[in-house]
Image (cartoon, rainbow, N blue to C red; front, side, top):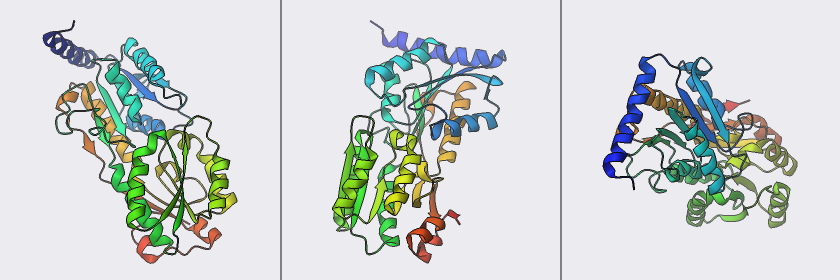
Length: 326
């Protein structure tokens, strides 16, 4: 049985090893566990770019160990991948972007420092950390207040489409918390939701849109999810086919068909996660680094989509937009 003293000694030795590696000029080994390959991920390229800008590029400044679950988020699969990174003797690991990925490192009971970027869950509510101010373990990171984002997205949708009273919502097992928040907001605003909740992959997106058409929906809200992000091109094509005004998150911001997006400033979130990771590589302790809340948000308006749909964007929305696509 591991005693508390052994636990603390192991953590101290881990921190000393990181400091020693930096002092000797050895390139640190940095792990990254995500749900998707780099070419399909929204978050991984942003983090890799941020690290490169800060002097930590794979092969020049660091050695990258990248693992992804290919969308398979079963607990045993994620635990296997987490243990692979631990066995690779990583000095630091990034866990992106979902709660099951961060939890895998708790289940692995490792002392390797882990930095998460929680874009679709609350790390305190999900007990990834015991305190935001003093995480106390080997995990820390950045999180996005998804509750405020979810409710605000519906508010903006009604501001753009004041007559709309029926929305199609695409969700899955990872976004149930967002769905619960949206249901409460919809009830208070007297808005009807037709909810398509996906479970097993592959998601039949076409069937979801067909169900929305039969129900007579007037617009679409898509939650932040790794599966939806990986199929954003298909979502964009379906939105154009069904001519549904789309209100979504950061993962759809660059895709044709999105009408209005309201989300966290994702590059800034990943930049901050990268900075926290580098601070750890230079000797910082995750236990002493408060979990930070994203405080910068983006309102994106696509005037091309608005023109195609015959939707006039109110000046009140345009005036607040941080990005306008013309």
